[in-house]
Length: 559
Image (cartoon, rainbow, N blue to C red):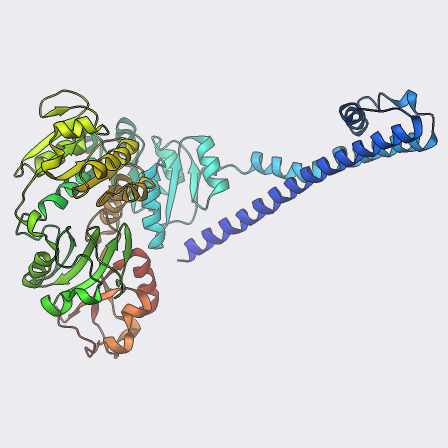
């Protein structure tokens, strides 16, 4: 906590100094322009009034610049017959010396010095149990966000000097410049005292980083691969865990389709023998679409507890009672298997419950191949730009004609597994024109594309970088995550200063946003925890919420 506070404080002070210095430079340049224009207009007037010479603005401007810079001392000097113009010429020269030769270094020299001197360090000191992130990508950015929300220390080892310097100067990130393929550079990032090393450059370099990190004992080595067949080589190189986010995102996309036709509660996390937590997407045409959370009657009819809800990509925990449920809402619910099955029945529509309509899978790369395999129990039409085995329709998914060939009018769901985010957005727009009622599930490479896809009309969007960040956080921190694509976590934590209070007195949900799902006491998990339940010394609370909620809860209980 202290490390993060110090880092954040340093970053804010540096940012404030940079902003102040930039403002001074801009102010100086503005003043220089105003003074130059003023001298030019005055010179025009004096030449006309005293010498009877009509000088154009451009000629007068040239004389002022020459005088300011002392390069020509005013090409009109031989025309000055009055003492007023001679003194004015001297004044222009003195002003130029003051502005250019005295003030300019005062304002610009510190800025130039900063850009030259403020380079990323090559080593860090005093860190332990931290995460070494080799290379800075969108996945690394998502991981940094996850670690920061949990106040976990990290250091980025960036081999690109220019990028390392930019990150060091312009952001609050803790970064060092070094080659992560070299053991000595990793040691400069505190390798021997680290909790884990994450290799995220490219497949070949990641394997080399794993080799370089093997010298450290008890340090988990995690690498990324794009092609699953490369995993074995990373294992040989020393990787403890090899992650393939494209395969996982394909499985996650497929689950959104199979959720409506399978009796299983896929993705449920078990809290006790008969008490789970799971996310359930609300389908178009279900009974609760159009109702508010308060009017849905889920708690009264099923006995399950709504932990949170996603409303068009925004998570709320707890969901506001007045919030409206639509066919883009995803409920995060806790309860027994029987209770959760009842909630699932409520979220399904009659049309999709019986699986009518085929599934269109657009894009047949790693993600699309995984999706097609996972939904093989459904009738599936695969669309891709290239003709190859497994592709049913060859064409551009952003074109209406291609969608008609895939019989989009009879389809129930389209899964956009294309690798280009722009194509995904355009395809969503076309789909909404051709088949307004169809379910659109999309994959996004860039996190910033998620909102665009929702605005275009997608029902559900998964961001590859977010999934990867959640995968890493779950692996490194040994935490249960309800789903890798959502920032909801399940944590067991000591009751701390809440011992002796009832849940109503503690008012945990209102104070922190987390939901208490169960209490572990003397080896037993108690799930019947109403407002009058009294917390005892030694109890561990099982709570669910967002990363930010968990940070607030940790402070709330004094952990």
